[in-house]
Image 1 (cartoon, helix red, strand yellow):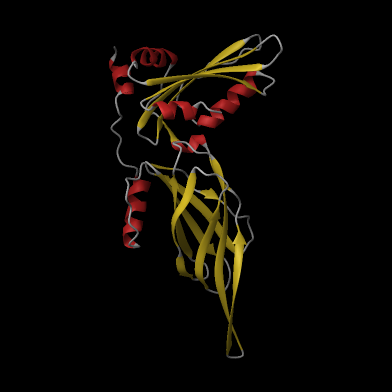
Image 2 (cartoon, one colour; image 1 turned 135 degrees about the vertical axis):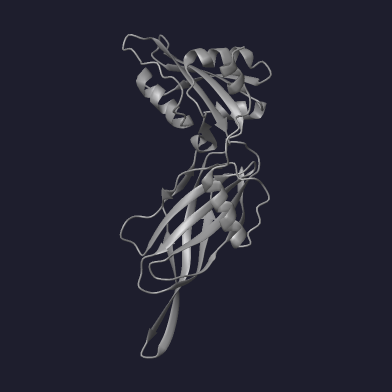
Length: 278
């Protein structure tokens, strides 16, 4: 097969992300042990509304078995806050909070960090929400007398979804290249699923599926108003490491139900199963 397909089917040799190297250095400086290699990082997500006492965002890092949440906490008050910690809760059994490293003190206008390690126990692509509360101590001094009290700050929900586990391939993948790669990926595990989804148009179904996987560098065929079916291809890297090929056919049956046939190939059968289990 072609050199392009050979490149697609082989593990891409990508340089380590600068953000991963910087975070590894930060963990070493705080004497936080990292048992696994950092594989993937997502962009910072704001978790607080404007105008509050704290400005908080989170960056999500992924290893083979863990999700690491780096909470960036800026103190927007006029006084130091101490004993800064985060409390996490989630209602799924596929993950558990392993350990949390908190911040001793954050000066006014300064940035601090709390780092939480979440273990993925029973799933490769668990999707769930995390509720987070920042707890801290405020010290005041009035007329020579020092007082302190504990306060807390609830954050917006952090959502972990399928697209966060995926990264785009380092080059554009057109339909011909995808088809050739699909035909020559005989050693990969194929899982097929057909489901009925609640969409009124092919456009809406296509947009929703692309949003689930978040892959942007594959060829997209325009949807014609007269089409009764449509094909969507997804080619990306799970945890920036394992090739995933997903072939999706969308259409409507005689009852005007949206029928979605999904075929997924990856090196791991359970991964193929989870990625199309919508």
